Image 1 (cartoon, rainbow, N blue to C red):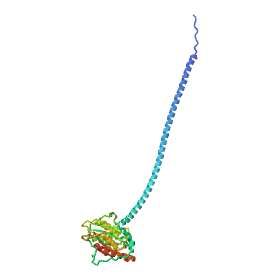
Image 2 (cartoon, rainbow, N blue to C red):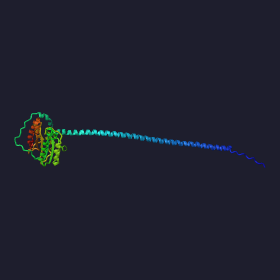
Image 3 (cartoon, rainbow, N blue to C red):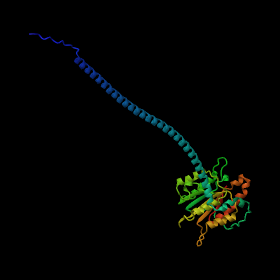
Image 4 (cartoon, one colour):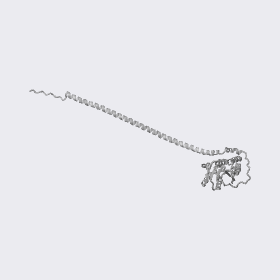
Length: 332
């Protein structure tokens, strides 16, 4: 029996090479596929990072913008505060000036409430004085004290003031206090200057209820009164009459007390005007308001050129108080 010849087996046959090649190709393919996948991941990561970077840059830009805006707001606020302070300071200056102008204007306004004839003072002073026939009948001695509402009309011009202090003469304030003592109890009081201004300005146009504190306030106000009125009590007399003649009941008796030392106009015209303002009652003949006067002729002692105006004042007051039921007293 014949023995078959064995075939030689080669490890590196063609089939083996095919397998090896396929396997190697598969590995390469997997590597290539893997590389493409990693690149896509890298691209995704890069895009995500770029997007995040853009967001952060945008947020940073917004923060910087807000910071700049905040700086502008702070600067603008500081500027507005400074401008506001400057405007407030300027407005305060204007307000103070306006208050002073109002205070000055009030005196002028109140003067205008008196007749326009008061502006003729300079002309009247040059006119020839009309001789007033004096009454021969006996005048009442002293000042009548029948009134229960009293009004003081005071000349507060320079001649009624102590030149060393600028205050109203002590003699004048003393006489006012004496007059108040002559009226221990009254219903109401008021005090005005010769121009018709209310010396206690808060009480303008109203009666002051009588009390010790009110009397003390009146004396203090007179001592501290700075406005220099004209040397002519007529505007004050007329305004006192017009302000209070109708504010009267059947039980009220109003009395005006004039404190002064000079008069510059013509007496006849003044007497007529006051007579018209304070007309007597047709039935009783009584006038609504009694007028009294206290003169201070010391001015004649100090200034010679005041002599004529002082005598004119005394002449007018004597006749005026007689016609209106009162009395005139000259002090030393």
